[in-house]
Image 1 (cartoon, rainbow, N blue to C red):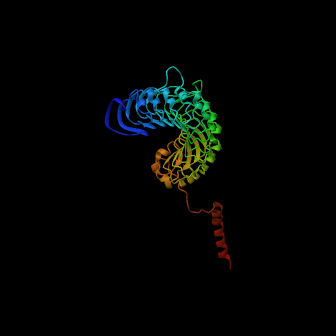
Image 2: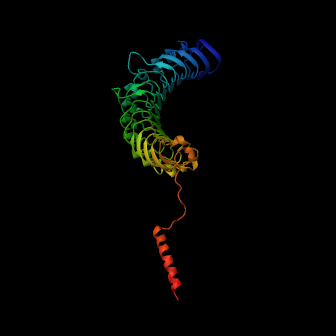
Image 3: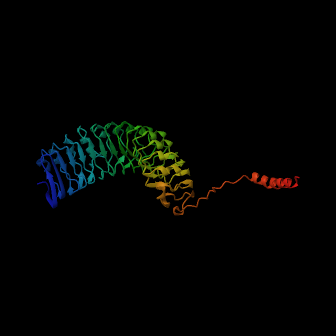
Length: 395
């Protein structure tokens, strides 16, 4: 029996000595569950209606390589005994109601995992852990590829020891309250540049301040960067154009200033770009159309000036465009994707002009006819009668 006092509703399961996957299950896990699963390699109970605490006896399922209890309603601290599962490669406890140990301000559970050299994935996202990341996080397996703790009520700073996780592909610490040691300000640690295997970095919706470390732009193989909704300052370096593999970058809702680097045009794989709600000024780069894969471009609520480059009409995949609340001027492009954008894309740019449907002023029509200079016309008016008179008086 897997679950005591459980209520089943069309329960479906697949189990063997190799793995167990169960759907439509409700109730509490029995305290001795691990004793019955000594040879199990994979236990997947994701997306059920399980509640109560995670039994510490789970450690007796010593051959487990995958433990997935995500999307349930488990409560209480994460059992330290999980750390004794030496074969564990993937641990997903995301989106429950798990907490940290009350006797320590740090997530001590991390300490229990430091002897596991096989761990490749840890997901704790969506649990109200309300704690700090310990320095021992740097002692996790060097094989670790995914570390995800979004929306966990984390506080304190990002430990510099994270930079020791040399195989990390995805680091997600978004939607927390991460700050510096004084809980008033903090910065993105320089050590992140050591994570040369990193492909996805998300530290959005925290309380980070200071500038973005220049070393971050040395992660030339990174695919996605999300630093949105912090209080980051400073300007964007031209080195951003060296991230040739970049697909998504979101730096919105910060306090970034300076110009948009012209080097952005080098990002041929870029699909999503948002620099919205910052203090950027100057023009929109004229050759941004060279970022040919762009689908989403949001530069709204800055201090950008000049015209919207007509060359952007060449962005054939563009489906979202927003430059509202800037100081742009001139005629709005109208060809290609720009035939589909609405007035909301251009709000509060009083010097823009274009089609009436965009709720901007009408552009003055440029005359196509060629006019002679006034001096030539004047000379013609004077000389023509004189010439006629001479011809008339001539014998």
